[in-house]
Length: 331
Ligand SMILES: NC(=O)c1ccc[n+]([C@@H]2O[C@H](COP(=O)([O-])OP(=O)(O)OC[C@H]3O[C@@H](n4cnc5c(N)ncnc54)[C@H](OP(=O)(O)O)[C@@H]3O)[C@@H](O)[C@H]2O)c1
Image (cartoon, rainbow, N blue to C red):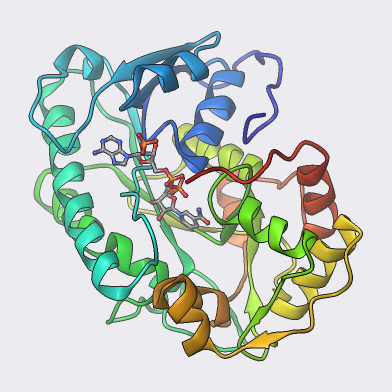
């Protein structure tokens, strides 16, 4: 199964781009590859492992095999690129502690600096560099709605810790040499890899738990809809803009977990685990992210990108995802 359905290649109404997708084997990267290729763009899918390149191969998709954390010369793979989607995330095995997240953030900064070097060296004019991050970048607003006008948090927390250094590097490149940066900050993404399959399996086995009291809001979004938002950003986002990408209906943790349980034919999740205890099991960063309240408004993405989520809420998205779901990935 893929993170994103394979739509027939559409006739392009916008000029075709040559888009390098870094992190193409990941949840978000693959969704971006599928959405861009389905629209007729040429996609260079940057992967570390050749077998991932073979898995992603399709019309309009050309694999580029490169591990950006070790030295190498990949100029040929970068030449002619007119847009970049940076979907790199350093994999952290085991519990996602704050210390591990900080180390991963350092590592990601090094990877992104190699990416930028190669992009600067190639000769085609770059229209967009689409960078990805999460909603934890913003100051928490509790149960109140927030949007792109909300200030960014001074101190990183939750998943935001994983990209704090690379974001600073990208903002520096935007100022120093005009990197056409477009930032998408996304809600919790559910798809065929990442947190969702294992989470689903726990609920299926009647072992689901609420992290904290369960009354916090979460803003979720389906991987396929993230793919279409990235495609729209590549095609039409003005440089320097940021967009929140999440579905139409943020829900309290207890509500979305109940919808997931119902979609699985399992009883509602009622057991509560204190955040600190969940932190011991899955790492503080995961626990904080699931327990914090994030109620995002997606109007700018709709108006500015013409983005319309296929799954406006998890009520449609979870059952659709589960109809094609695969067992939890070993990652
Ligand atoms: N998942 C979410 O819920 C969520 C929510 C909000 C924002 N985001 C953002 O979305 C972006 C992508 O996240 P994701 O969930 O798709 O992550 P993911 O599934 O873990 O994928 C990470 C990708 O980065 C690649 N990568 C790691 N180190 C690399 C290196 N040295 N050289 C080349 N590629 C490397 C991985 O390759 P391998 O397959 O070879 O390891 C993989 O393709 C991140 O910026 C994240 O902050 C994700």
